[in-house]
Image (cartoon, rainbow, N blue to C red; front, side, top):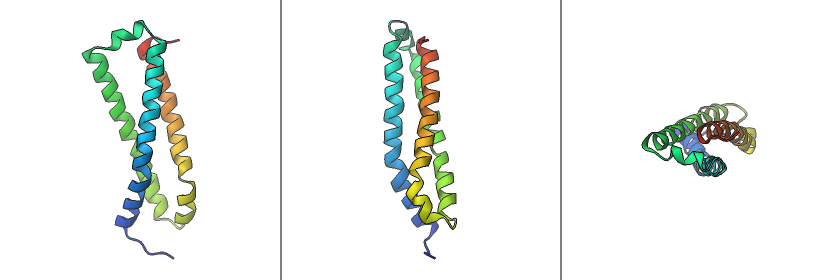
Length: 115
């Protein structure tokens, strides 16, 4: 059995998850932009201090939710299934990305008046 420290496992988790966070944020931003454009001209009303503040709040909440992957990843890395986990953890990213994309779509539809 391979002996690694928590620090090494945390470093490995960061190396995997932080580049994926960029992809996550880009995908969610694209969804918001698409629904903003679909909602024109009504969506222009959201370009205000309150509207932009709400978008920032939702973006921060989405990134806090993204951090849940670290809990699962670290738990899996300290288990006996570490090597198998390292080959399939992309599935956790894909599942979380899909869930976040669906939530982003619904929020964007509501905010920008798209049916």
